[in-house]
Amino acid sequence: MSGEFQGAGTGSSTDFQDHRAYAPGDDPRHINWQAYARTGNYTMKMYREEVRPVIDIILDASDSMFFTPEKAARTAELFYFITISAIKAGAATQIHLLKGNHYAPLPTDAVTSHRWRDTLKGIDHSNDAAALALDQIQLRGNAMRILISDLLFEGDPSQPMKLLTARQGKALIFSPHLRSESHPEWSGNYEFRDAELGSEHSHRVEKSTLDRYQKAYSNHFAQWRNTAQRFSIPMARVSAEKPLLEALNEEAIKVGALSI
Image (cartoon, rainbow, N blue to C red; front, side, top):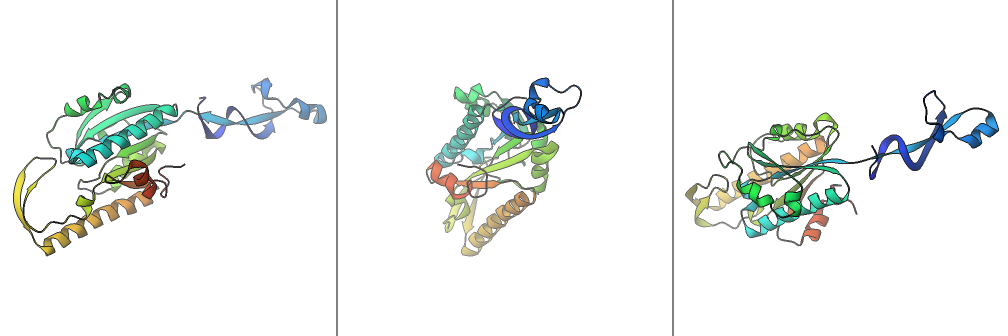
């Protein structure tokens, strides 16, 4: 296929790569006639392959992604940034919305026309707290899979990583987060609400409770980072409190999820 980016193989671009001996059936337009005049042997000019990227964008549509105005805005910014970048790159782009184990496809024009939230609202809300069921999506072979998720669900990260890299896929993860999630300043009595289930419960937070929470939160993301490294998946956490470009520069560029 002809595309916007250089592939690993040979193709029909104007970027010269190497020579090889002529074989019956080869395109005579690529014969090196100057070499033939010198040696009397047919040799072929090989050019670098041009490819059109294939990109599957997966947006975690869980309520926790939109729990505060700041996080909702950062989720939307990342979604637009990645989708428009894929479209401008000429990629064959498909978008998938996942809310727990409920899935909905999304046409790219729903993003450019700002109608994607209508689809978001129509996704089944039952069992929202379940881990993202990536096995519900028909991910394409040799595609780049970009997951936008806060990763705030239980389960072994190895399973989603396997699905993201299956069939020779390459993956990137962008994870919006709030400081109030990682470093809450709770002390005393609180009324907590489950972002996914909507249930509420009262709880008194002592220092020991807060320490256990912060340790569990830290361990959760350390496990995701370690697993991402094992699967060679660049994973970037993106702060919701800072301007988008500043937040992306903190991690996304350093880990190779983005390049300038």
